[in-house]
Length: 211
Image (tube, rainbow, N blue to C red; front, side, top):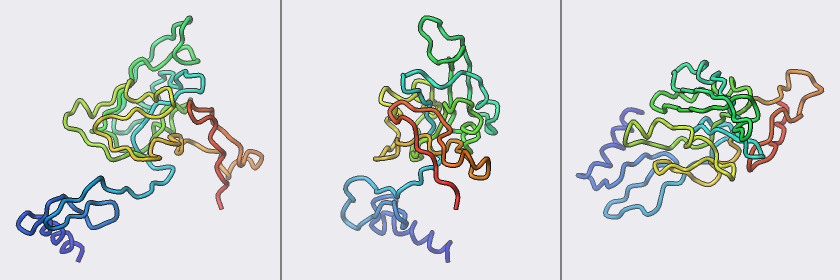
């Protein structure tokens, strides 16, 4: 019946049968009504804290960038969608606390599979992911995010591009899928914070031990 249900949904939205919007029957989709258009935007379902969404490059609370240009994220990426080039910091005006920083940072979302291996590989917790995954492009160039688009703003939140459908809460707790203290490790460290602070959010609370 699954195939037949799919065909039925498609037929209902054909203009011969009064369909006016691209509709899906599940929660979060548009609802097409004969003779009238639905006002406003679709409602999105609540997303888990560790959802794999659009990436961001984080900054420390003092504003310095966390990325040190080590290129480990690019090396571990199975889709080869990340391109990074490091450069030496200006001693008088450093971009990051280390000797080097990410001078070039690009992610090609036509290739990205959101596996999160880049997040796991990052030694400074610079790259993490938001809870946004509804974004589409009208050109290939828009799909290649540059460093200027990935680095969080002065408020610590991701920059919003015109083709992204951001909703409340999707730009919060962007580090929700970082490595956490493992309950299976040393019992003395269970529940202790094991990551650095972030601009706009401070230090994220320690995660609860597994049941």
